[in-house]
Image (tube, rainbow, N blue to C red; front, top):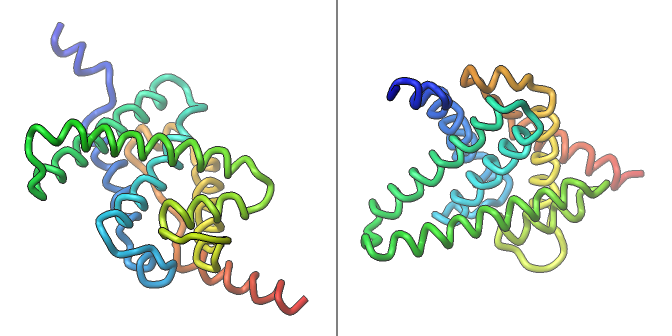
Length: 193
C-alpha cells in the first residue's frame, strides 16, 4: 500500500533533474553580465521564477502524468526556497510568512508573463521583465527587450519538446549567448532599415 502512494507521483530523480536544469540555466553568468539581470538574491530568484513559470506553462496542456510533474517541480522549488531562507538565517517563525510572500511573487509574475506572452509583440513582455527581473522603471530597455526575445525562444523550444521527454528528466533551454547575438543582430538591422 505504501509503495503505491510513492509510485503515483514522479520519481525524485526526475524532479531533481528538471528543477536542477531550471536552476542551472537561471544561474548562467551571461544573464548577469550581458542581459543586465542584477547579480543579487532577488535577481537570481527572479531568473529561477522566470524559467520555472515558462516550464510550468508548458506542462499545463499535457496529459495528467506530465501535469503532475509541474506540481512536483513547484513543490521542489518551494522546498528549495524554504531551505534557502533557513540557511540565510530567517527564523522558524518567520519562514511561513516569507514563503507566502515568495509564493505570491511567483504566482503574480507567472500570471503577468502569461498575459504578456499572449501579446503579439515583445513590448508588454519586455515591460514585465524590466520591472520584475531587471528592477527597471520606465519604458523597456535594450536589456529587457533582449530578455523578452530570450523568453520567447524558451517558450518556442519548450513547445517543440515532447512532453514525455520531461518525464524522463530531460529539459534543455536555448543558449542565451546565441539568443542575445541574434537579438542584437536583428536590432541592428532594424535600426539600419
